[in-house]
Image (cartoon, rainbow, N blue to C red; front, side):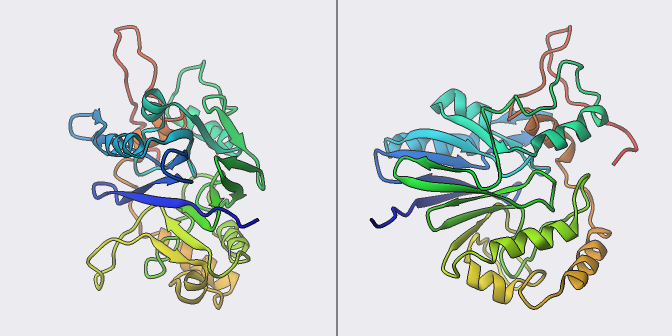
Length: 290
């Protein structure tokens, strides 16, 4: 029986260079949303839902049943709209099982409340490496890809591979590995695991930072193109050379603009921190830490 291949629609946020995805089997069928963005104004510390509402409208237009809201990892460059989308559309919020490692790292760093659990229970589902499930008529598999963070996963849905921050477009390269728990060596191994997939597998990146010779953002490539042309992690580069390249590059990179608010929200599955005694919700800025 021929495998059903997914319909994939991309939603690009120019403020954070993030691409969120709506993946579904057919009009009126079942769907998943991958890496949704909650808008955040750092000057006013105010959230809004412009990006997420575009996806809500499209789900309604296509008469889809949202079954899953999938996070590839706890992002450091944008806040997750998972909780908002679940409130609007239902579905389960899922992430890789390694999220507990990230929670354990950041709970003390941000002075999070004592009641904050570091076992991933904020999410409805924690996926194990290699776990398989279905989204309506679509077959899906989780692939653990540690390196950018220890908890990164990629989602293979039919012939479409959602990379998260593991790889970008071939002319942009690979993700940084200098966050707590990151490892260039692990990223190399993770990408080479992905390179075992069929060459025609479609790949979808979570971010695009167009280089000087490319004006428009892009997000879709193939395993064959990544193996041949990725400027950081093609099949020809050795593990030792990649580690040296990645670590040297990471040493020059500034922290993402939204890393402080993003992590505090994203390890909570997109929920904002609980109100304090005065009824307000607060994000914290640990000084001289990162």
